[in-house]
Length: 237
Ligand code: SF4
Image 1 (spheres, rainbow, N blue to C red):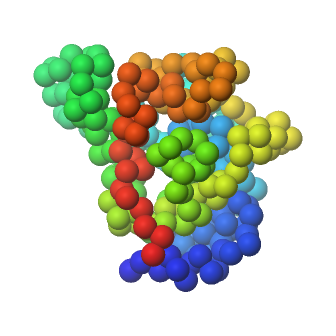
Image 2 (spheres, rainbow, N blue to C red):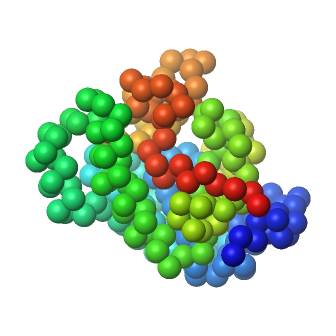
């Protein structure tokens, strides 16, 4: 049942940490934090650890990460000693995808790019969210034109689950102030012009003044630059 209106009243006026604590109280072990080790996810992981959360953190290891992403994943696991679930693409699905289309299919068409995102991300995400009531994400409104409507809590119709974004109204400056103040581990690529980091073949550095997600699938139109993880047309009520 969609209780977003009721939940919005409950979290009114809470800051990010307060929203996380509320989520942990409300959903217990049935809330999960999804991370791809970007700056926002690192803030949430630090907050998650500070709350003493018992819920799980999961990541979708697509097999095409940058080495720097594996480095920050390793540093994060060691620092926080949290339970980390790692979801990988199904071996059969991945073999069929590459055998039929080659390893660089994502550059050939949007359909092939989405097929790759499906095998490496969205199908594993369904496994990660199975049996959960809510998932926490690092979405922020100012990240891109596809995220300007992000709310603190939404009903994710695609996955039949609540999606909670405690940093929805944070600025980039707030994220980095938090990271520096708390000495949170972060992806070294952020210092090399990568504000948003996904798979290596589909991410490039951006120029000063460019949209934070301009380096993701840069060969496609901006309104298409999502991988399907957050395309479930979430509703507030
Ligand atoms: S971001 Fe690129 S490599 Fe990663 S799953 Fe999507 S298309 Fe495949």
